[in-house]
Image (tube, rainbow, N blue to C red; front, side, top):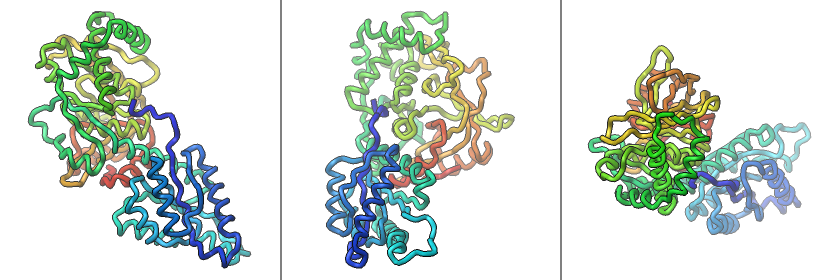
Length: 467
């Protein structure tokens, strides 16, 4: 599955230093090599590092960069061990495809009264960082930056976020999203597929509902029975839900899952009218979409491949992601009610009760009642976001941090839902959302992940607007 990556991200290290210091200060390069190893050892929980040697000149920078790309690492971490020339790095990065981060830390974190020129030299990475950052910026090469303490936990948090963002960039560059139909006239989901491919990496692939139906038809009765038994443990089952209808929903889930696996898709989007028009489906695949999101696949409704891609990316970056849309503003709660037709990532549901699998009356599409998981998300910090194609190569992430409220008392909302309270307030958030062109489909993440979302946008060259 797309998001199930158990190994740590792998980062190559460019420890930059001016080789001309060695004749002046014999032993300084070995001392700084040991210091770099000490720094990397303190970051072992965040990533695995490849550090063959100090990069003390243009040739070494270029050879190490080529090595890290050939090894298929997830990113490159630049450490400043002293001053080092920016043009050497910028030249090497012209042939680099890996995400970059430059971390400016120092062996000493305060100036000692007995400091001599040696101490000043090993702690002077700051102006080397300025030289290198300036050259990268003017060469149009994106890079994430950190300046701070290596001892307080700040650096470890940054590296953890950068490593996750770098791996997500790598996944985006090989991502494929399946598309099955689109709601006619829906304009905010329209994009330029090749602009997505050039700028962000994913490939959008258009399939027919017949392809999905074939995969569903090939699912065995034994596989269906085994999954139904699992779901009887995962959900509280509506007593009125006919066993054959539950089994048919499971058939669609297993068929869609096989469709994604066989094609190497990280996610998909399907327009529900396709299922009714095909004539071979008895109800809509709300349960299938929900089960697949719980496994880490990206999803969006109605042919919105951009949001399906974003949901897949956020699942990889943050561990889980959900799809929904804003239904109404609630000024009494200072919140926004979000829900969609009947899909939701039940792996993000509140933990004090099981999701309820409902025999739900649903009139759209002209099909039978679709089994629908009903739940609310876990309360706590969260963010709602939308990826906007502004035009050309410009993409914008409209990002609203806030919290999911501890509310689960709506008695007649027969679908997954949540109350989201934006940190900026309902009026300001929604007004800014409209001004920025945020779409009506959204991706939701739980927890505090703003730092790594910022890093991902920087590495991709996507404009980030925090509401």
